[in-house]
Length: 454
Figure 1 (cartoon, one colour):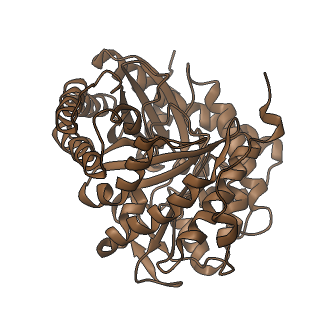
Figure 2: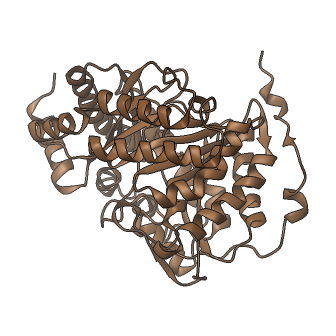
């Protein structure tokens, strides 16, 4: 039972500490959409999404109004398009037609993003995979709400370096295709190692092939809530610090569980997971960086940053797991530079570098996220950065991801502005020593020895 004190406490979290349900995401399977031509397939995909998600937005708004819980985004994820469109799509232009159908469906249903223009190529690429990947720059330039992702590595299979090499060029071409808007297309492209099937957060969301016809996932966030709780135990021992994070994560996850179960019931769609991720926004007081500073750092990037983030990430997970029936996705702490005013300040001051961010990704929930780099960074260098992050995920048996934004026409010290939740980012320096000979080797990096667990 929820007592009066808990109700008052939750209201204070919402009103004063930026607690929100970041997204309700409906996953929709496209596996039974079959056609011989891309045009026919596009119609089937549009119709299926619009039918399944017809009431998603209005249901989310009704729950938010009735319970007084802000639900910021309503989103859709679909089965990776490379798996469903290979029989009908024979050219890059065919895949662009599918991307536009996804965009039209997102607009019709009223969601802000739709994810799943994706390929799973951790071991090798099919012709369909390659065609979709080549279509990504134009697809993201010609649509407003479509997000793309590619899983290029896993602990079980290793790293597909042919895909990594290609993706360095794709990131660069996407930046060029959206150069007039500070290369914002790259903000809608995520490259994964060990991508989860049940991730409700964009831009990396897709409906996994192990999922059913449809599912409801909820992503909940509350960096401000955690920071406020830690202010009350400033100077206390690590035991007190850890307990406070766990208890706070428990309370935040309960809010997500409530919303998820209610959305599932009203939409008559199975409940999937609650993803408790401390996902920041550019708003003051909604920052993961501020939590790390409250733990005891003068600035994010100082010695001790990785240890503080590891502590935070682990105890967020521990508290969340106890609060929900199914906690999954990427649960933990996100460190996107452009979406966190504390991270932005640390990057501008020079305290936070890409190399330090890479170290932090060993213990955070995702990886190098929303990082602006000079627009003249070479595709090979971008591929090298992707490969480094894939290696961290592969060896550590965790999800890692890369969302780099080479901002065309801008260099170190300038700022790229993306607007809304995507925020703005200072252009950060990249190591100028080259890795072309490494990246241009063909094949894949084999799976590590500890992948053999049969």
